[in-house]
Length: 111
Length: 115
Image 1 (cartoon, rainbow over the protein chains, first blue to last red):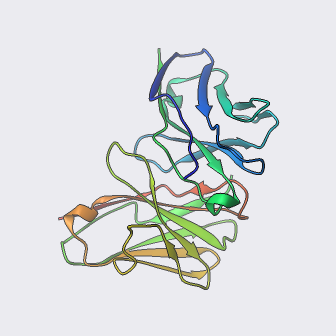
Image 2: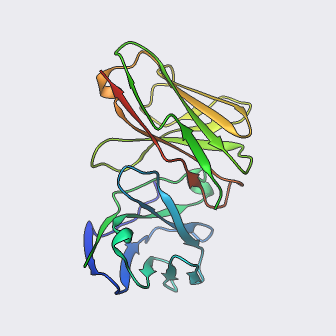
């Protein structure tokens, strides 16, 4: 399995930036880092993905270190609705292009 | 983003009966769809890969005769839980990608309760 390591849980104040780290030290050169989140009792929601460059979209920013062994998902202004489990996943042909979910990080946004 | 729809959202069935769950890609074609299962307070576990026009490939430990997968068209995959038992009660989720190496989109999930 593509191995990633994430903290079990994190708290963030509403309105502040939420920075969620992920370690993926065994990532290969052609493998992507994907981030999804799951709000209780719903299907996972795609957030962002990247290969080696930093990426930004309307939801979040993804910062990937130069050696690609870790990354950080940034939610710039967290709201209560961002409370969810966030999954960092390495995806590539080595794993059949499957998305294999680890335990993820429970992010609690508090007012 | 692209839309993946599952039906039903929830189902209750009697032990020993079979239940079919549908997964549709509404605005794109998907040659591959994936089926997951999620137990309470656990992460998603990949069950199988559904391939249009060919047999599904199952992850280790998943019984192919119990979880029948059919991917008859580029927009529809079905998962049938045969002879369901209470331990099959779970949240079943499918996903599909417009192309194999882009982001995958997930359905809203189907909560199965076997009584």
